[in-house]
Length: 454
Image (cartoon, rainbow, N blue to C red; front, side):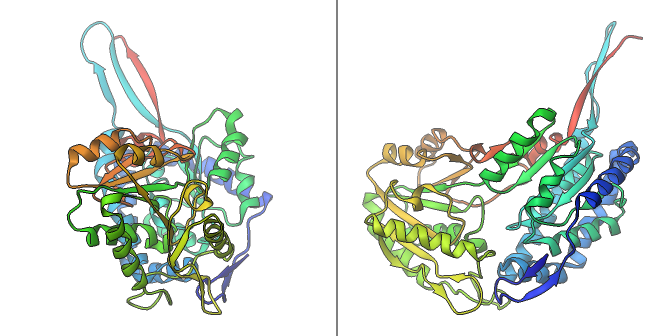
């Protein structure tokens, strides 16, 4: 399997993919090793993960350079991702013990009662390429703290980063028979679905997530899916600094080259401030620097996959063909690398692919709305339900809109962010289950009820 730099289209490494034989061998290894790991105390496991937390900082320059080389995200954003992964790991280190200890429900009387939390067993972590550290630590860190063994399959577009993750976990003291990387593309990932695992945790597209859920349903084991989104942002007519709001929206659209499940993909602006917003957004979009992701000052690097260029340009052409106006961008840049200009389209509607299908790139349509009621209707007109943002001077007014949105996360005067202390979950085609927060810690353990009669 060739690892290609999306900025240069050069092969930077070649990896031997796993086979059916090696996948089964790794499963058998981890199945055996998990017993000893699960028998350790939570405190002992936390001590090991604490060393991994430190190593992410010690080796951050190498880790960030590798991440940028194989995914194309600007180097500063790779550093930001590592900092974010350490922050989430720190939160899990500080709070997991509290949520995994035994709970005494009844301590007096003829029968005492308690709840203990035991590992699921051996789980599959089928991860994504756009934020391999962030979406990875959402799963493998609480899984390991909870006493599970992990078969970790990084995306084929972030395999080198996945290999760093395995190396550092082993260096920190996670036994090699507790955490094993499985390398390869979709066919290798499908091999994991044939194994008698105790849980499946996937981050990626709705289509693949649905296939996984259908495939493993008969096993009656946990299956969590962190899938995509078509996340809306609504600007009310009472905002005071329209340029600042436009800048925040633009960052929500283009950060990580627009390749975020919670990126802003649709913008609705109330008619009273619509023209000013569009002007400010376009002006700032034209100033974005697209280019070499290793250079300081680059805002947008290449897309990670070549096919995404054609996909985005098809969305733009479909919108323009149906009456949208392309104010700026959308063209391919340069001869080498998968670069595209950030695109700004107006006069859009929900008959266009751009406003209904997940884009996963630095393109967006901006639509005018009359009032909050129309905004709520349009924001909810989607098969996805990950996040939604509202910008307004009034929290009371914004909350009334947010309350009506069928999404796992809502934002007031911010967007495109995740907090370790809050549950990260999707509704409808955006996924099943929860990571992060205390609920995400307990997603990797199973309760056992004790009835104790002395």
